[in-house]
Length: 265
Image 1 (cartoon, rainbow, N blue to C red):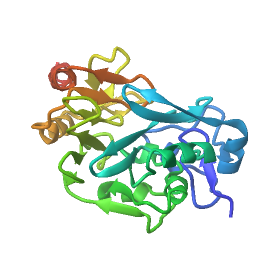
Image 2: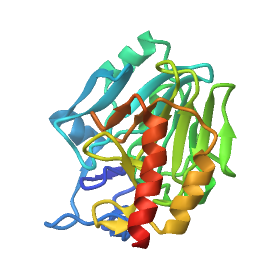
Image 3: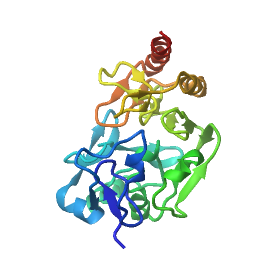
Image 4: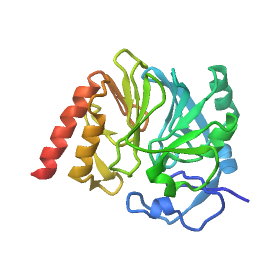
């Protein structure tokens, strides 16, 4: 059976639906010309994968741009080699490059908009586990034993790596904290909750980014509390160049204060 991929959000389905539930949700949108679909095989004919350094780690993204245009990051940690985020396309060349670096031990994804073709990636590396938060289970379009759900507000993968439930954008929105890397001082890999903004000096908090729906203050305060106590110098956002390199903890703290003051005004 054909596994359709939505051309607006990049999510791969187990079959060929007529509607994309992800895009019809109020946090996303259906394209101006209506719902359109492609497949993994068709994407291979029109796109390649761009692999390049992204502020000290290997970044992977589609070229030309596709759908939401997130990029994945390859993180060689003490918890194993982690693929942070997923993409709608897997290529033999990308798999070979990552295999040469030690392969992928697990995949962790920040939220449903970036689930993409996560099972294609898992299967390409021998059915490695995909870690998702239990609160977002309903958004999995291709159920599989490879998908493993975690619960609670934090899931420690090792002494240096922790998945943290940031919430807000989705109930299970997740960030990854890497205490030891990739640079001294550690890093927060934020997906888009919190969201590194265009000036790359602070972050913001939205329930829907394309539809400009602000995140409720209560959700922002919960995120602030869950991230308290985690030190990091760098923040890696959702796509190429959306990073705060140096001073990341201070930038996030100031952004919490700025947002909460603005939303209360």
